[in-house]
Every structure is written in C-alpha cells, then in structure tokens.
Amino acid sequence: MIRRITERFAFARFCVLHRRSPSAQKRWQEKHMRKLLRHAYLHVPLWRTFLREKGIEPDSIRSLADMSRLPVTSKRTFEGKMPEEYIDSSQAVHSFWYVTSGTAGTPFRFLMSEEAVIDKYIDFASFRFLWWRGEPLSSLATVRIVRIKIRGLSSESHLFVPVGEFLSNPRQALARMAAFKAEVLSAYPSILLEMSRLVSKNPALPRPELRFVLSFGEMLFPSVRRFVEDTLGCEIYDRYGLEEIGVVGVECARHDGFHVNTESVIIEITDDSYAEASPGVEGKIIATDLLNYGMPFIRYDTGDRGRISYEPCACGLRSPRLWIKGRYSAYLTFPARRIHHLEFDGAMDGFMNYIFQYQIAKKSDGEIVARIIPGPAFYAGVEERVKESLGKLVGKDVRVGVEIVENIPLAPRGKSRIVIDESTRPGAGQVRGGA
Ligand SMILES: [Zn+2]
Image 1 (cartoon, rainbow, N blue to C red):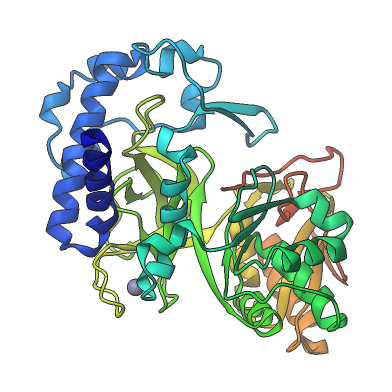
Image 2: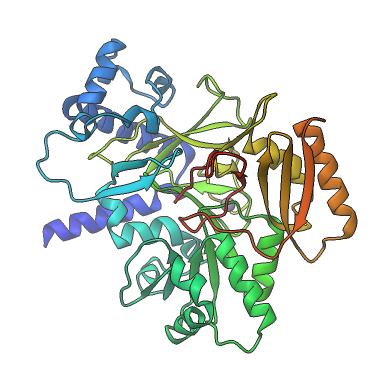
C-alpha cells in the first residue's frame, strides 16, 4: 500500500517536471544524470572502461556542462561487442530486448528501460499534449487510441493495427478503427497521407471520428499536415522519438517545435566534431536517456540533426524545444562525391508546399530521378524548378529527371525512403528510421 502511494507520488513528480522552472528542470536532469553515470561506472563494463581511459571520476561530472567531458557514443559503439560489455552486469535477467535494423541493414540489439514498456509512461510521454489542452491527466489512461505501426499490442483502450495490415486492406482497417470508436490515431506521416487520400476519394467509407492525430517516425511536411488535418477533420500533433530511447519530445498546441521530455532525456546539440553548438544553431542531436539503467545511452549520437531553443514557448511551458532537420541518414555516391540526403532535402526545401512526398533515386553515376507525389498546390512550373535546384546540387555530369507518381514504395519498416540507390547495389544508401 505504502509502496503504491510512494510510486504514485514519484510518478506525479515525474509528470509535472516539464511544467516547472528551467532551473528546476536542470537540477532534476543533473541529479538523474549523476545517478545514471555512477550506475554505469559501477555496473556496465563499457562505461567503466570509457571513464578509466579518460581518467574521469564519475563524481567529477556534476553539471550538464560537465557532460561535454564524456565520450559521445553511437550505434557503432555497441557494434561487434558482446552485450555483457554494455549492459548492467549486476542483473541476471533482462526482459526488454529489442532488435532494430541499423544503417547498413544490420540488426542492432538493445535493451530498453522498464518505463519504455509500461503503458502509463509511454502514454504520458506521447499523449501529454491532451493534458496540456486541459484534459485531466487520468484521461490518458482511458482515451481510445489506435496505433498503426510495425509492432505493438492491443488493450481495452488501445487498438494496434500493423502497418502491413493497413496497407494491404486500408478499407477494412478503417472500418475496424471506426468500430473501435478511436479518438486518437497515431501513425507515420506516409500512412496518414495514404489514409487521407483514400478517404478524400471515398468520402462514404466508414472511418473513426478522430479528435486528434499523433504523427511520428518521419518528417511531417507542412503540405501533408494540412491535407491530413483537412481530410480527417482534426488537429495533428507531431512527436519525435528514437527506437532505442523512446519519445524525446511532443508538440504543444503552438506546433512550433517538440517540447523535450526533460524528465526522461537530456538533449545536446553539437557540431560535427561534437563540440557544443551555439544555441539555435543546427547540429547533431545527442541524447542521454535518464531512465535506462539496463543499457545506458549516455551522450548517444542519434544520427539526427536539429536545433534547440531554451526561449519560453508561447504556450507557457519552459521545457526546451527541438526542431528536427531530417529523420534519415543516407547518402548517394557519385564519381565526384557522396551527397547526404539532407542536401537533397535542402534542395527540395522550397517545394514542400507543393509536394506531398518525394524520393531521389540514383539510376546510374550519371542520372538521378526525383519521384514526386504532387500536393493540391502543385503546378507544372514546379517540375522545372525542381530539376534546376537538384541540378545545382548534383552538378553538370548528372542528368536530373522528374517523375510525377501516385505512390512511393515504402521501406520494409513501413517508412518512406528519401533517397535510394537503384544503380548497381540494390538497397545501398539506406537509411535509419526513428521510433
Ligand atoms: Zn509550447
């Protein structure tokens, strides 16, 4: 009984942190970071080695600023190592192993924190925007949510629809969602787009009367946001997360950046050599998961890029806000040089009000094709401008074609591919996703 009361009290404190002052949030993060680092030093061989090699006493890392002395880690840190090296060696049983596909299609096996599999934590991390909108915190446990994703479980108030099931029979999936009386839909932007197009072509289809949509896992482009909101008749909240760490941040009603979940994650932005970036400057997103003691992710390079602001948000919350630049890390390689997908992203930036989605396919060393799903505001001149903009990027030795298409094939995990190499090595150049 007392334990339950203590737990409830602890969870309540956890939930209100992001509404407190910036200094209270910082104190919380520093306290939990110190605890995590000490644990990692004592119980995780990899971290003990790291700290000893650098001559760092864990107790000497006191503040967020001190963290810059710690090494940056990434998926590569764990590759080729035995799990015993990088997980908590003091525990005999670990029950939350996950496997995800890595950059080169190689699986990455990791342990998630216990909180990452407890409904009340997950729902709070993702759906706290309902609370911000004035709904009681307790309603997060009862709101009827449908999730279209790769894996998941159904429960009384949660309906899980596998991506494959939705794509193979979207009408049936819509009917199931309607029968379930879903109030909130959570799905990838490309799935939301697919659903909205189906619904706009077939207005008589049964479908749920949604109150909100939560999108995740891919870039939510402004044209897609508007189209989905108009078609499904409700507001979209976007969230940013990582499979390894879980939800990092969610939009508030201002829809101007993700409010970082400061109670569970520390976000740093660095330049390419991992030196701290100036506030507001785009750089690498480095995350520290304050909840995961099984496999500590400390100063973990997410592979994503973005910028952060500590300025107060108009909504009143003082948690920092994060803007993501891209959700994939992939290159196309040409004789002259490799081109990062974010460069293509940059070249396409100006067109995202006219385009729902695009994909850059390398056909050969001398040719790329931009596949474009046009949005409602698309006009013929856009095609030429796209060619021009991409032409500047790839140089005169690479021919640029544009194909207007209905669909862009989904990557195996149900996520769209921004760049794809179709020349000699099928699948080369692909890609990392996010949760
Ligand atoms: Zn806000």
